[in-house]
Image (cartoon, rainbow, N blue to C red; front, side, top):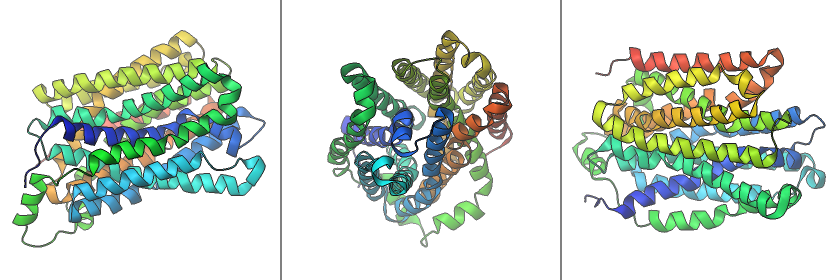
Length: 410
């Protein structure tokens, strides 16, 4: 049976994705508070690096989630996978807010938070690709409608930053550091219930049902992706990884490092993230219309060129508050311009019965290897010069851009 395209279906897909990204980004947005609670150190940069390392560890669970929920989505349906990814992410996030601090539990607190972060990563590993495919297979204007799924990223980030900013403004830095950030994590339970109310009403996609009927034998989506479609998989990994690395450069690395260097205060840090998220959202919406008219590749190329410029301005951004705000604006717009066509580009690389696995695997492997590790690597190599950190990011962007330009789909 075909799924009727309605505002409710689009909202249901997008809202669940917003909640998933809120769960994922809150850990980075509240990095200083999480670090003080579970990774205490006298050196603020060391403490921040430890939080970023734990942040990166969550990404290492994403490929497993991509394979697990990608397989479930390709063999048993998209809606089944989307139910479980949202539930798992919400529970893991809420529990992070309930874990006693290092001062109370010692190493057990640190280990518990790491495990919960891994569960977050496992859920998100399957969420994005499944949501992309569910909407991609239900609409005719596929490139345009990808903006609704992709908007979940800046909206989730905006929600996370907005909640933290509201706590700082309402209760002050001290109360937010003591307990406010925990409440923000526990709010995830409420958000999950809202998301599930939409997703429990979903049917399966018509395109998926027809492909299953037409198949002569059950496919092995994991095996097919790594053997028959390994070339588009590699292109997708570098595309997603480079775009993701710049994303975390703009909203995680720059604000947190600037704060650790005493260039900005907590309010300014959260404001930078909010500005980034708003510009990212605007770029996502604009690029949906652009990609629908002229294709995926031109906006991807333009956005990657902006990536490289932003990466090479890292020295100026960490030395001057005005330039820091400029970089938040530049990286937000650039990522948004790339992000909507990126989803459609990846979905068009793979046929229906391996699409969930292929898209999820490319996106999550890329984000695990390159994006999730970028804040930690860049923070660690700052001692060799700030431009070194920028060059690392610029090289990633150049490789991702070359992959898109050189690969020719059959």
